[in-house]
Length: 407
Image 1 (cartoon, rainbow, N blue to C red):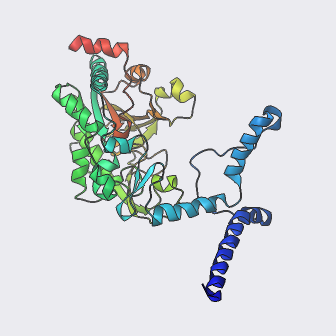
Image 2 (tube, one colour; image 1 turned 120 degrees about the vertical axis):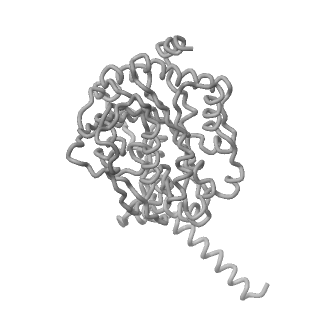
């Protein structure tokens, strides 16, 4: 090797050394100089606080201090953002709970979604029987009180847009728990009215996008299609709305914003954005928000869980309570407490209960009993998202007795 080549090699190694030193000391320099960290990078958890000397042992204090330092060192968000840019945007690598798909689409992959997609997390026969007993018991108990019951199943974004998944993941798609549950209830001739929204949303794709490209939820088109499908499945026993058919009473607004998957990978404002639609009720003067006695249930009095929303519509007919998650309270809707689905335009009184928290379903016997006693609905609409099917529907001895009485 000649001297010129040796000099270039040594110079390159020295540049790398200086770069590593710079990276090592950059947080210290930034902290002393008061250089601002990156903005818009949101944390999806509570950051560690400064350990308390008076209530922490020395061995525990050092561990707590390390946690605090990891969460608060200068330029931490710059490092997080840089990692996300290279790893997710350029290399299309997945994050812990997000898969990067075709055309910069993002898919939520938490709650066992991938395991379900590839067929590694399937129901056992015992679990299918448990599901059947739970839904039939709930239906039977409500029917004894003159209340109809509709089970609504919302598919994952994976299920509706497999063509947007990475090629390898797309090729591994297998029948999952949603297929198993629907097929099992059908094969057993279950009396439960089940609305599987997959055909509705698949059909809606011909009219436009029905899920937000960078969010786990559907957009306004998906929400509207789902609500129309729910209304089409109402039993004849539900009072008819006076005045016959009327205009929908809502409109779509287009906007550009980050989805929840963008937030999960720390790329707020830096991921390619899409124009998406949200649905807004035209809010006629005869539609108004009201209180519901269900607010007195302990689960909501304690706080920390999204509160029930109740609306009355003077031009509607009948009473409905919907047990739901974020798909019918967030997906395709503006981010405010007054936002509601088109279902409020059909009923005289419509109450929605967000019955999920921390991966747990809250719609136990006490809640269902309170709904029947305090709201006197004509129908209970029970929505379950595909990724939550692994969580068993709450059953109870009271439901089992009602189920046994009609079998």
